[in-house]
Image (cartoon, rainbow, N blue to C red; front, side, top):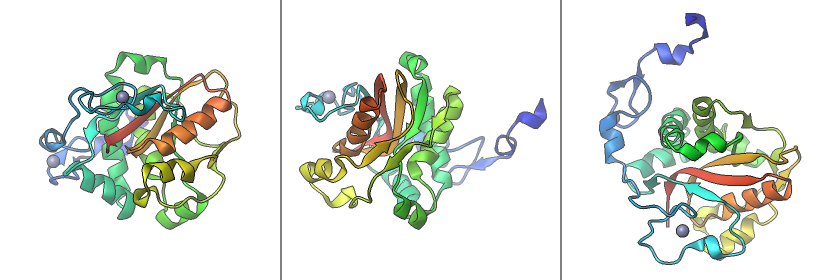
Length: 225
Ligand SMILES: [Zn+2]
Ligand SMILES: [Zn+2]
């Protein structure tokens, strides 16, 4: 049934990294240039060679982390363009890349729904789109799962996390999220762009669990330290 195919799939795409024609998203050569994390800890996403897993802290609420790439060039520039330079289409290319990693994992079958870290209204107006939602969309499509949107919000605008220390990041997002939908018994795959201290994802994962979610996994395209 040709009419059910999306137009985007019928047209050639261009690789955001090198501009060659691709079927969709990044070409294989550009993907090969992204630095993978060889032996990631399933609970925090850091290379297991790095001492000190943060999962033991009481504020860690994520059950599992998938963050396949190190947050270094050349991937970093693409994430920054998505977040700060209005290049919305990078969300699809990066989301498809993350979707390919996640759909290859057997435990992805146990996830019930996908959610993206919400932006506060003020930031959404400024940027015009939520980059985490753009990343989550192709993942939901690939896994054929619902993408939860309504009922996940931010109570208040928070300062940008990037200039804060780890302690300040956790304090900054404490109680920042509000869940006003039924997530009882649901296993959620929670999507964001980069996991650094885990403050944002853990704050939202904690709020989802207090609202009844059975399990929350954190999925980001990159892991930063
Ligand atoms: Zn390329
Ligand atoms: Zn760990």
